[in-house]
Amino acid sequence: MNECSALLLLASYLLNTTFRRLRGSPIYLMFCHLSVINLFDLSFSVLLSLLFVANGKWTFGEEWCRVNATVQEFSQIYTLLTLILMSVERAVGLAIDTPPTPDTVKEYVIVIPSPITIFSVFSIFHGFASLVIASPSATSLVPVKAFRNRYVCATGSGAPLGYILTRLALYIACLCVLLVCISLIFKKRGEHSLPQHFHEYSDFICKTCAMQEHLSRAKLVTLLVSVFILVEGPYLSICFSYEVRFSLNMPDIPQDADTLVTSLKFLFPLLSPICILFWCSDISVYIKKLFSCRTYDPPCVNGQSTNRCKGELEIFSLVALQQLHTMCKVEADFDFSDFLSKKSIVRFTLPGELPITSSPS
Image (cartoon, rainbow, N blue to C red; front, side):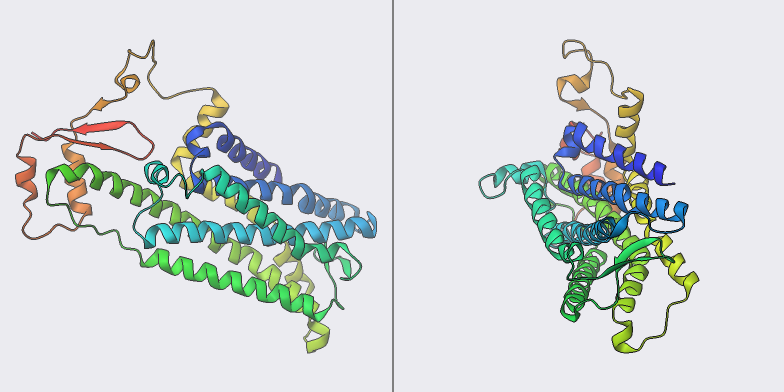
């Protein structure tokens, strides 16, 4: 299972660094960051836990025990901050009803740098903040121990109360931000009014398609947040309850429950890339291209053999306009059938694709 997860994560990283379209998309860059941190978590936490299970006890000394605990804390916080960044980016795009596109970014090139620059800065900030919060586990200020029931090293009892409350407040604040962003995503409705003038259809169709794609990725982010809460939430609850158990006189945690909850924690690095790959069909297609050395585009010789090479594609798309009519909220005084009966041409461009010409007859 862990090997398959590592391969999926590696594939996600490769496709994000290989294809220009995925590198230029902010949400795909964040998926790549999430994959890299999951791979980092697998390389240290899961591997050491498997060796713990194989040996029956922790045999790597106190230093590696602190490293294991620090890596777990760092990975959890960094993953949580990355999910917050995804949720905020999706929620803001839906709230202002203008998802970020290459054209809108170019208009504000002085104010907004390239997506790679923006999210490189955020990744550095996330990494620094996560390292600061997780660094006390690497020192003697916070006691750590190897748990026989969990097969991991984590913060033990006797940790400073201020450190425990700070981490608890951080997780609660992050959870509140995630819930607010998810509520904004669910409140978004996909209803739009058709424009009254024919020459506005090009921009309208582009905006509608971009918004639908933005909303689809927002639902994927919501799914990732839900998986993180369901999988990592019980483990974090057990960790905090153990740390404050003696001060609050809480009962001991059953051994079977402790082992089960810890095993669920290791599923997130596997479930997150699976959700991304199955939800995003374009990523699946790029993975097929990457690993099978196959392309689905028509051949191009000297830039003149196909319409795709010319940069323009002529398509009769009456059905697409009819489907658009059913998707949108039509005003009472607008006769859509009258528009279809006219000899007019609408040119529009799908997100990431070449211009498409629609000519109703």
